[in-house]
Amino acid sequence: MIEIKHLSKSYEGKPVLDNVSLTVKRASILGLLGPNGAGKTTLLSILAGVTAKDAGEVKVGGLDLGREPGRIQRMCSYVPQSLAFYPRLSARENLEYFGSLWGLRGAKLRERTAFSIDVGSMAAFADKRVDTFSGGMKRRLNLAIGLMNEPEILYLDEPTVGVDTQSRNYILATIAQLNRERKTTVVYTSHYLDEIEQVSDEIAVIDAGRIVLHDAKEAVLLRADAVLLRVAKLGKDAAAALERHQGIRVEAGSVHVKRDERFGENMAAAFTVLSEHGIGVTDIVFGRRTLEELFLKLTDVRLRDGE
Image 1 (cartoon, rainbow, N blue to C red):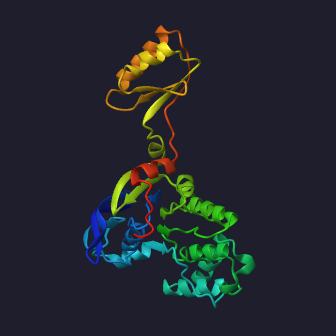
Image 2: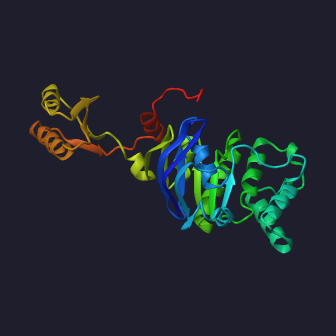
Image 3: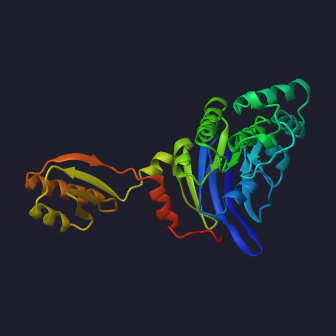
């Protein structure tokens, strides 16, 4: 659905996106992770046609962004991290106003407004001024506005910042429902790693303007450094025999076999040693690292507040 090739963007000579290539499948949810200043918002702004790219190629639904930006923008909707509505208007008035900007009129405008109110679970306060809303209600309105044009592609930039747990869960469930029932393609950025893990089909990690990882969610989470063999009891002789093999280490009574080019050889060696010492294997864990562990490993742990 979205094909990005060698995309670059700089501000005042500083690269923000550096030769980014990325593909997003139709009807999928891509979770886009990155520390502060990594380039997430700039990437979404370019895809939505809000910001011009410096170099590279972007195709959306087979259309070239540089040649047919208007057609692409009609297919998409961008929900920014900042709240984008008029606080002195009611939720319904905001929806009607933004719907009219999409060219909606009459019955179609009423239909889409009713749909967005329903999706945002806003029926009870649709006619109240937005400046009286809680943070969670405002975030739901922000999302609802982004649905007025029935987008095929939905770009979401930190859509749950500062909301209560109930609203956060509701927004995540709504995104999953839109993807499942309407086949909406979603690109979702968040600082909440558990959200990305919860809703995404695929995960991409961007750091310093470069994509450092992109794969299916399960493949990403299964990228552990070692296979763990849990054993009933491991004596000193067996432990010493195991650790004579490079790529095998013993820790807390378990055997860790490194997943590298010698993985098959080392697994065979580990089972041979255990068999020779009469030690049984009680469990084999092929590793499921948390997304937070992987994210910190890929981007390092230093703070990015000043970037």
